[in-house]
Picture 1 (cartoon, helix red, strand yellow):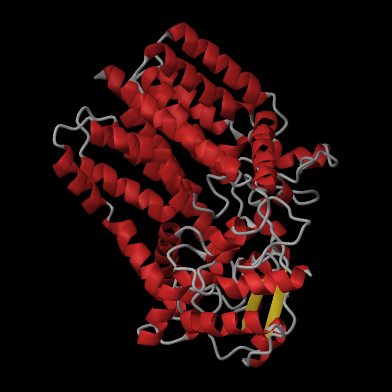
Picture 2 (picture 1 turned 30 degrees about the vertical axis):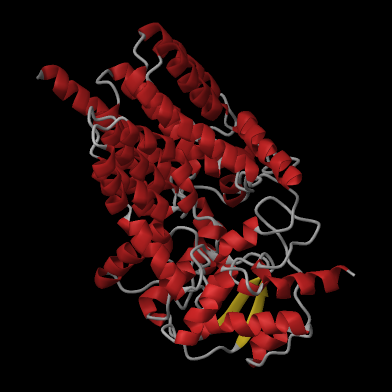
Length: 525
């Protein structure tokens, strides 16, 4: 009993240390503010689009968006609307969710040993990628939490396939491509079950949340995938160029966050030696996901897509690694990498104060985004909030909360960075961006040759801005004009109109792709 109490005190202390470190490093990325505008529209009754009453899905994380909407709605019941409320709500909610996930990892997955507890906390706490994206306003903390729940169910001697598939469905609902992380483990649990046919039905039942969302997305937005998928995956950039950029993305983390790949590598070696097939299939999800990240060219946010693999690898080691000598060696290496790294979460918040020329981007434009927001001369807790204009009382938007009132579009604004500028403009400005995140026409055009990771700039078609401003189709090219006319039926027409249902079928079966091909051929001549 005494040992249990001691372990409990240690766990609470370690989780408190982790939570304070996350809170100290809290920040909000510009990409997260894209979702903020959607949240404001949703709670105001203007739909789930980035622009009011325009059904274009500019967010990639439905479950995270709904969670933020819920906590923001609750906050507004008790506290009067403030321009910066959603920033603080998101940071605090992310910190609590991330800390709860780590607590469950220690109490339900890790071996009940103090050394294992310390290893888990230091591995995650000294990884600058994991700490950075435990806030940021993006979906990572919810992905981490759901992955911990998935692993808890999966590690049971006889996993309940209904529960396991339900959690898997929530993970996909939070971010669809995260399914690669858990697909091998889910397959293994089903294959090793005694009643595969009955359990397959259970898996289908567990997948109801993501199935319902996909049906809703198809009917509401007109497409089963978000607009960002078209903007970032249908770019015309060669597979070879994306592959090289994706490999560079992994190498960036080897350089900037060595704990990450050391932990993943150690988990792989441990499973190779001990041959625990159940955990090998869980580890296979890491390999599959990393292959996917490389294939799509990585991202511009250093480490963002690698925090979930790190969490899974840490869970495997916490549950599987038992030799004390190896644990001590592991702890020493983690401390060496984490404490003495200039990007360590222990002091990287202030690195630009004494090394103002320290690079925040590598040669391939992969960026340390949090360090960018913590830049000189701004310093102290919640530095990114200051970066986003807190000193000018413009942290969020003066239109936020109950002030988010749509009275009609006044103008069209073409933004380079979609997040903060669009949120500041309020609901009465129709905002699109050069990278096509919020615009369905631009997202379906090939990108310009000078692309950057995660940013694929499009050329604005002649007459398109005039079309948005006037509400009349003034696109110069007849093929693109016809495509736009048809697409408008999907994104602004009556949802249940039978003609719209027909157009949804035609778009999703590629029957209008020839119009884009003709336009692209004309532009290339």
